[in-house]
Image (cartoon, rainbow, N blue to C red; front, side, top):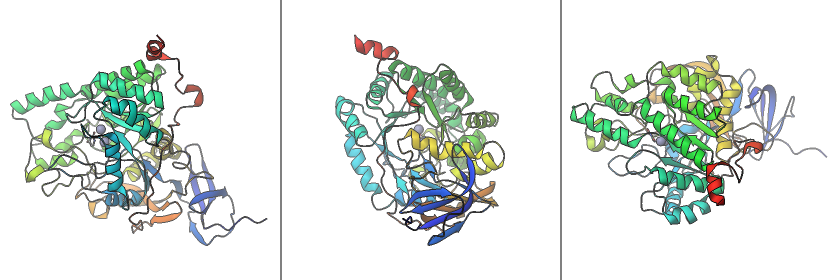
Length: 488
Ligand code: DUC
Ligand code: ZN
Ligand code: ZN
């Protein structure tokens, strides 16, 4: 019996997975990879990838799209503009956050977020949850139900007045994650230290954007990271510390991993390519464009993060895309005003530049192997959030989400990007590569020049359980201090 014809063959590329690089053809049918090999038969459509790297479509495990906010600030990107931008930068799966407002039911937050996404997404998407109000109903009913329904990861905050949980609340939600096999993501900064520093800076009249970095020094992140690790150890549950920015937090995570704790971590482009100087060396308000939390650090910090990316300390590399316009009155100038640093909406755009920055300055500059690039940007986030092996790899049975890389000189400019923000923090940066083609389930959504993604083309993905841990290291029922207490 002859096999049914292929819809598409991507021919002769240097095909990269988290494990290997091999020259082969990729045969695609019905939006999935159905065969890998040399000399595959001709198909209805063919793409010649000879001499070019082919990597899995990126999985951006941390981005914010159309997340409801208390006015006057509003995120620049909705599900269409954000995902169109993702596609043009090689990302085919995004995982933004269905955020619970205090007093709101978690289920209502998920329902609302589905409405925001429906018919708009141009790439596939899943939702993390943000838990800001862990009431009994949330802990005992809503969260377990939502995890069972495929929302197997959630973010909790140790800072921001409207989101932060105290240590007791963190222990409560970590215990739910442990009981139901979800992945907790933790924003680790010490809220009281930030408030104390902010009050003193403000009293001294230090309110320009650059003082944002002074209000959130590395110590603030280091302390909260250590505390998050200790709380997770008490409960005996894996955690993933998001947007790790400073070498002091890296030390804490290395220490935890050396103790055998299941502490995963993420860093983001802004900590590799920006410094605190981008918040302004004088009192110019333009530095507001790079205000994000945690803030970018000093230049000496950057090689420490590169080393941690290369040697396996970091698990995932995400954008933390949180776009606000600089012009107008609903972005970085809330109400049209130049406000004190602690009133500037936190976040920068980066969903489209995430992969090209890391491919160019990581792989092509010799800091990362192609395999490690794939692991950080696609395979590990897919595993962390229960989407692997459908997403995040090039394998028979996986969705045909692919990026074919063009190695060419390119200078980043906001005019070439597809988000709705009116700037990029990376304006003028010269890179050695850009995606020449992005395929989403076998369809070209970016051809190197034009966005071909369409509104509503993206599908919602239910997530399974995280599969980052080898089975032998998965949490066991009777381990850790928490289990000892539970048995009494
Ligand atoms: N910090 C966050 O915690 N989330 C969005 C953007 C930011 O800067
Ligand atoms: Zn955060
Ligand atoms: Zn974020």
